Length: 194
Image 1 (cartoon, rainbow, N blue to C red):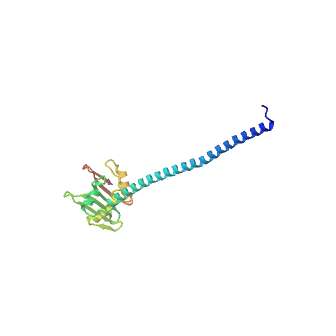
Image 2 (spheres, rainbow, N blue to C red; image 1 turned 45 degrees about the vertical axis):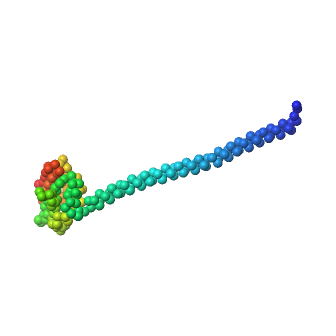
Image 3 (tube, one colour; image 1 turned 60 degrees about the vertical axis):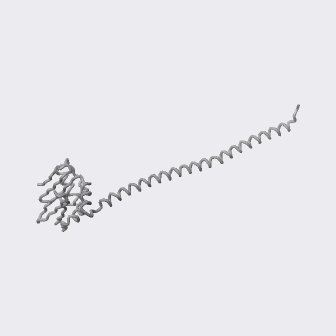
C-alpha cells in the first residue's frame, strides 16, 4: 500500500495537532490547579495566622487580667485585714525610716505590726508638709513606696540607703539617716549614717 504523500502529510498534521491540543489541555489544567493550590495555601496561612492571633490575644487578656487582679487586690487597703494581706506581700514585716535634714526638718515613715497583731503606720514628712496619723491612710500612702524597696537581709548599707533615698525621692544632703527593717524570720537590720 502506497499512500500518497498528501495523505501521509495530512495524517502527520492531524497527529501533531492532536498532540499539541492534549499538551495545551494539560497546561490549562495545571494553570487552573495552581491558583486553587495557591488560594488554598493562602486560606491555610490565614487560618493559621488567625489562630496565632487568637492565642496571642488570649495570652494578652490573661496577663491583663492578672495585672488588674494584683492592682485591684492591693491598690488600697480598706481595713486592717487588707493591710495585713498587703504587708505579707512585702519581703519585710516592718519598715521605719527617719531622715533628718537641716533646720530641724524630718522625714519619717513607719509600718509595723504591733504585738497585739494590729498594723501601725505613720507619716511625718516635714520636707513635703505631709503628716498622716491615721493608720489606714498612712499605710496606703507608704505602701506603694514600700513595695518598690528591693531590700533584703544581704543588702549592703550604702546600697540600702541609696535605694531608700531614691524610692522616697529624698536628697542625700541629710544630717542623719536611720532605717530599720524586720524580716519574716524575725531578723532585724538597721542602716545608719553617720
